[in-house]
Amino acid sequence: MPDFTRSFDEDIDGTAIAHIDRGLFEAHARDEAGYGDVAGHDRMWFVARDIAFDHPVTADQTARMLTRMGLDATPLSASKVTRLRQGALSRRVLPDDIDFTLETVVSRMIGLLLIEISASHTFRWAEAVLGDTDLVAGEGSAGVLVSFIRSDETPHVAWLRTALSEMGDRTWLGSGGAKHAGGDMISLLWDRAVADSVLLRRSENINSAMGEVEHALSGRSDAVDIIDEMLSLGSVVRLDDGTVADAGGPAPLG
Ligand SMILES: [Fe+2]
Image (cartoon, rainbow, N blue to C red):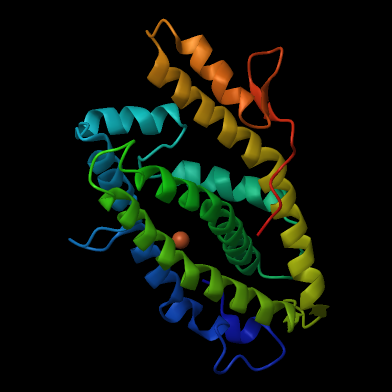
């Protein structure tokens, strides 16, 4: 964590910024990942899936699914951390005199906010599908579980939006005392994050979702028909190289 009191020219007393390292990040992390014996959203999603599909899958299948989706659950090695940091340093967008740790934390907060916003669309969809008692097991309880996850996202979005707005309204201090308008600093990070999110992540996400659909249908004689029908219902199209792209463009943020 950067020293927030020395990062800005103005006072941060009583702001959300002053609470980032006094509970906000930690509370958000516990909601997502759980804490001790208390399950977070990570396990709640698996429980919703197991209720809805009426037969619990093994941890082994879960690990394989995460691998297929490119999610590596093993802890980062020290050398990987160094490589990631060097990569991030080479693509930093703020002036060199701004604390790189501050840039990293604010970039992460913006990334989280964008994930929360796009996730809210998925949550609404999942709640409707898993709440459909004609379609899935559990008498609607899987959908109720998703609604609990969704309601936790409201304060996540709110604290991120508040702290980022406060930072944008302040003057950022460089290491030599130079002053930078916070609105400019936030814009630089925001624009890069939005470009990554709508161009890069969107494409990665629909391709990994398609991979899961194809995996689930493999071995079925009507797999091609089902995929064709699914694609006919939306704006995602198959490209010549076999990957998929959203011909309707990215969904508008928010
Ligand atoms: Fe969240």
